[in-house]
Image: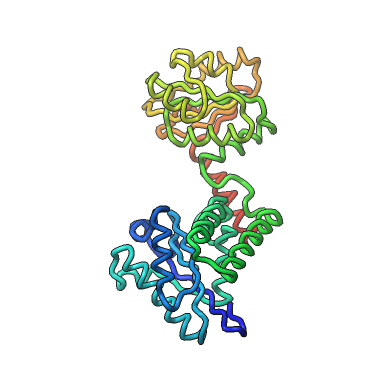
Length: 332
């Protein structure tokens, strides 16, 4: 973005999941505590007046404003310095980065910033995390006194654009990962999750994440059971739930509305006999069973029982794929 007053030109230099493998991205990533000094080094260049460093698991980018002057030559010099800085500061050979780095300037730089903020350039279109990460990056730059009026206004405008995109389109609608899709499936059955009880069977990370999503969605009680009592206590502490003995599984199934299962068992632990007994106690009130384990924890036959809604990992991934397809339509 240039001006007749010779205020400089915006540019972006960086790499992302589109251009570099995770191994390359890891080598260029900045830890939070490294950013202030890195910004100081960047602004030590005579060609760069303002800068923001965005470093996430999927991208490392420098947003900068060139020093006043002949914008064409300044922009070329500033971008070259940013590329050199990335290689130098991360201890990577510049020639090794040449194929991974991209560079955009002027109006294209603004467009790129807006797309990043709105999660149009994300690996998962419409994901919400990137906006917070961009705000954090801008905040770090402000604290380091590395931003000024032009880059600052550009960032603030990007935040406004991202908010509009989320509120006026369906780009963020629908769960986009396996751990959060459990909420969507449970809502299909129950509608409102307020007051529902969730049972986590096993110690799988995905089921723990799904339990957290269900808690946020309104589930009021989280129960955790595992063959190892110690692991059950540990996981219960992580998800703000209550650990219960493995031998209580029949009773726990009767008490719960949503079951998330992810054990390391080689044979199903949720079998028709067990579920039939639990459903009788429940008087056949709906029970959602989300089986995230491979091999499966739930015998497929339990889906034939009245009131039991069974979903396995393939079902979850299918819902994610459908949601991402819908998000892409909104993005287009």
